[in-house]
Length: 357
Length: 211
Image (cartoon, rainbow over all chains, first blue to last red):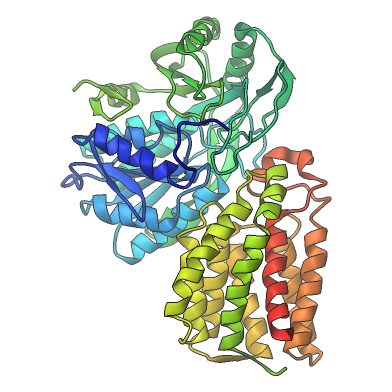
């Protein structure tokens, strides 16, 4: 294993320290428990948006802390969810009194740790709602699995929901928006190469020199199929059509009902894409993919969307949700309405995403 | 043996930390086959934290000790193992309360509360290829042994035997929870790492009371 690290044990902390030294005007770090938070937190009257997850997906989530996006991000060990004490301390730090929204990717560890954190924060009188992101169409059924994984839509949700919080949406309205973004977003990724978790020291999975994995998860979880390499246009078509032609997807998620004061099961359905839909398209590198290759993918995606009657109204191309040094790409399409586009265009100032300021 | 003492509990936790360190690579290998290759690493990190906190509570009641273990695991393990094992110890601690020794009835009630906590937190059922597959049969067997008049050793022996059987029964199962569920049929043929560590938990307690 060759990596630009000093030791696997200090990797996450040293990376956080570097971020704060680089962007002292945007964010601060808290250690033990670890989290990054907005330099100007708590922002009076504003609902705080907190996300987090295993490290190794940078710039998500720490790179999205700042004005117009996240109030705090809680990094776990590489590919391991953060622990409840991190989210609890982050919530205490950034809560202005208007409450906290947890944006949680649907992995069993993340879901449980964020639920426990929400319970602990509520016990201290902090209002908290959790919204799950589960957008990975590579997972077809939810009955016999943990359900769809949270992937690319998380980035778009953090931007849109963060902007809405900045505008002054209250907690309930913010949670409704986050849920709406999630059910309108779909993603699918693929890998050309594996990746190596520092603490393990060897590749997470083996992929032959001429093999690719279609439908890969962001921790190297297996996808739909392993096939011989194909040209970029064919790969793009496989991913884009899996997303665009995905039928309605229904599953049950657990959300906290403030009126009943307990966790309840909520049935959600993602409506399929229709000709005429406007979308935000993200072509996301998995960490080790040249940007020029991402544009080759975007080129084909543009033509496919056009042929399917989808209008790409905004796009985001680059490395935003990664799997360490994995080479590969993930496509995300998010159906948007006027409100979501306006929120997307709102100013944002974070280490990894900034415009309008 | 008619009672389990606080000294047993402290020795159990201490010994468990050593057992998990010994099994760190083994559990991680099991996890690499069907999960994300961190179970052994995470449990070892968690129990190192537990060991650092144990001296401050080892002269307190059993409930306090177990709840401290639970909180240490919750704040250091991460993944799914943190909340699940953390909940197991928290619920066990809440069930025994401020007692300094446990009767056979207390022991079984403690394990039942602990396992019910795990099921509630993880929403897994028997046969989903999770730690529940080792823990739930163990509790049933312990209840049975208690009903038959068994002492602490007999009860724990019954629990360990059932956990071992339950653990091995996860091999042919297809995972339905957690990251292994994404493998679908490919998860069959592998031992579940969570069921394996759960068996170690019980086995270590039995070893401590019979040593």
